[in-house]
Image (tube, rainbow over all chains, first blue to last red; front, side):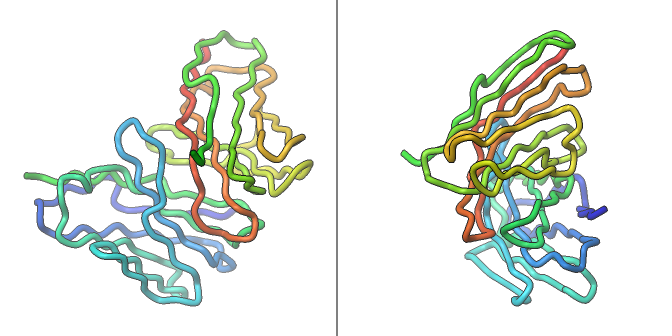
Length: 112
Length: 113
């Protein structure tokens, strides 16, 4: 079945440095790739998403890149801050009428 | 205020005792979905619904039922709960005409002993 692999499972970076989280997907028909952030004890919230007709998308300190040929996509956070500490989930979907598959999550620690 | 609500927020029950977790949204969203979150396994989709009277299995539907009789409500039913259904459950919704942001409810922590 469809699968989304996410790495690393845990990531520690110094405040101010960059963080990169990578995901690969198995279903070549996937065309929508969101990223969710979940702070401790809270619900997941969308932080950025990308569709298959775009290779890169940026929103301030956050960017996502997509390589359809290799079936992988990545989240990049620059100039990390303490409030970036959270669990991040990638996901893949064929679109609005289909189910969505999440990765297992990456726990990001921002070190002072 | 636009929101997704779930009840109860916390529930401890025993094996085999039927239970229902309610989910309601006030945003007129067509698409609603249930997930379970377990340590090391991330979010796994249980069931989703694209509109009233339309439901589909997600990745882990075994042991669960859902119904969608009204647009705003999407209850999750565990007919005979077992300890392996102990988990954190999230309901979510979004408009059907977009594959974009899902709005998650606050979560329901279920313990089955």
